[in-house]
Length: 201
Image (cartoon, rainbow, N blue to C red; front, side):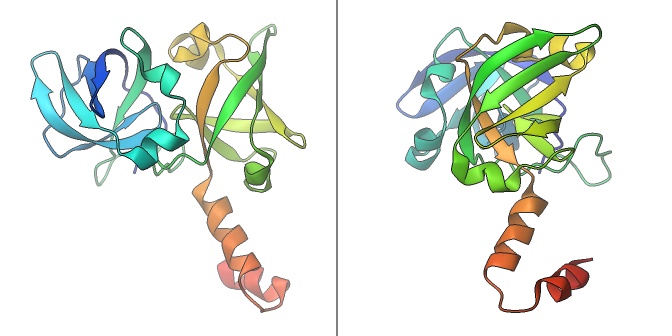
């Protein structure tokens, strides 16, 4: 479990034979869970200047592999430990879909970012709800049929990969897990909707 606060922007050293090698200041232990651009992976080998993780075929099918080539930068976040503060929101590291950055607009004290994604996950995306973009915990401001708008403060923008993103950049999206669970419960139950909502709360 993660909270969407990026520990470090690290660099990809290599990616071959399903193994991704990361150069970073943060050094995990073998077996530790760590989020790479929001994807929960396991450290399998440790170096003085980084670590390796292995990407399963299933993981490779759901992420934009062009973002994982040598020389590219990625967000890394170690898993939460018992007692850690949760300053973002709870993130599982399970990617729902790939998004595409359509527009980045600078305002007086923030940046508006429009991201397009697959219509099948829009039902989990709500105004003022939470979402993780490449592992960064963010708040949704506006929702459309196949896209949504985020407003990002300068501190977040300058300390994440968002400062490098351009239109057509592909990103990993994880929707709020509570939205997914509630939708699943409502869809697969024959109980009255009001009763289900009351039972949830």
